[in-house]
Amino acid sequence: MANELGNNSKSSKDFKLNALLEVTKAINSNFSKEQLFQIFASILKNQLRIPRFAVFTVRSNMIMMQEIASGIDQHAFQSINIHDYLRKINDPLEVYEIPDTTFEIFNLIIPVFHKNIPLAYVLIGGNQNEETDLYNKENITFIQALANIIYVAFENKNLAKENLRQERIRKELELASDVQNMLLPHAFPRAHDIEVDAFYKSHSEVGGDYYDFFQLNDDEYAICIADVSGKGVSAALLMSNFQANVKALFHYISSLEELTCVLNRKVIENAKGERFITAFLAKYHTRSRMLTFVNAGHLPPILCNDNRIQYLHEGSVGLGMVDEMPFVKTKSIHLHPSALLSCYTDGLTDLQDDAGNYFGQESLRSLISDNRMLSVDQLITTTLITLESFKGGQTYKDDIAFIAIRFV
Image (cartoon, rainbow, N blue to C red; front, side, top):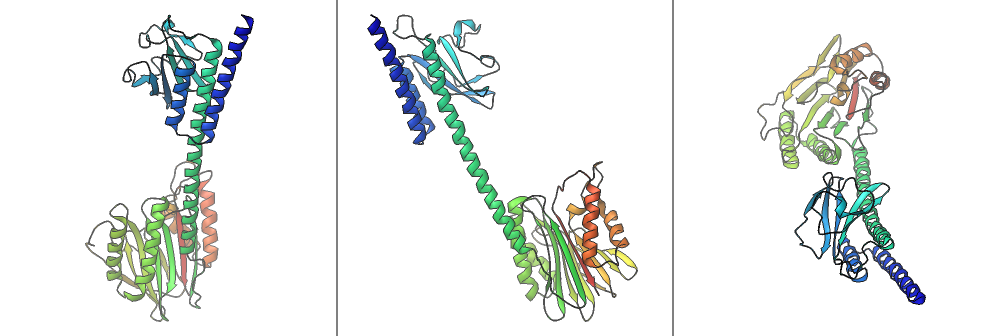
């Protein structure tokens, strides 16, 4: 008799070890969730001889969804509210101890935890005259261990998928950031009668702000600053397309009115009504010293011209807001020697301090007015220092682009 009991005990341990090895091998072979549950069900039914069982997975710590079931109505349990039934069960519990009759067809509820977090509940049941040992402590521990291995494998697989997804996103952002950095000019055309400097601060890895200053011919230069509504990769991609159009169209469309209308159609085609772009577009003629511009819904640049400081408002609505521009107005201004043009995006004026106050246009106007005689690189440095001091412990919540141009 002692030998028979010893053999049974050894056989049980061998079976459990083999079952654990089978599940581990399946996990390492990247079996699907459904395949792993099939193995688990086979072990419960054929090896442990449990006639009735159901396995529920915890979802968002609120709802449990039925994964597998045997010996019961497959539709009897579609979902179970943890807070009503199982939330407080931390150890194997006999069903008769629950005052509710929801689980009366079962005998035991076996919770499965990992790091004190509930992963699943295994419900098992059988009749008294059936040859199964439902209350065997070793079997209960084995079921818990087996379920834990399977569920932790699910968690690890999900975590691996999420890590891969995050890595893909990171690489896409890096690529988009590299593309955006290539689009922003790192050096400006050298001219004895024009000085240019700029800075760009991105709220995230990529943004939708853009500025440019480039030569059109021997006598003319193009100026542009723009801001795409929204943030992220899609905004950066739309802006890269816009930048390519600006570079190309500025060279063969002489009229700023026509250029604005064509750019509007291009934005409509590419954004499909989901985004729009505000932009300031200008030409400067070096011999006549005339600045001609269109402000397409952008924050007005600040022009210090002789003893006058003015905002450059005139233009149109933002690009991509409407299919056809209702109006486009251009304006030309003669620039006196040492005139200073400062263009910026709303991330600068919308910057907040610790008290929630905005930096605002008037603060920027005062900053530029007080430092209008500085060189453009000194003005850029002063502006950056002022913004850093103003924001205090706050972060930059939006992209900031700023370009300063001195017409000597």
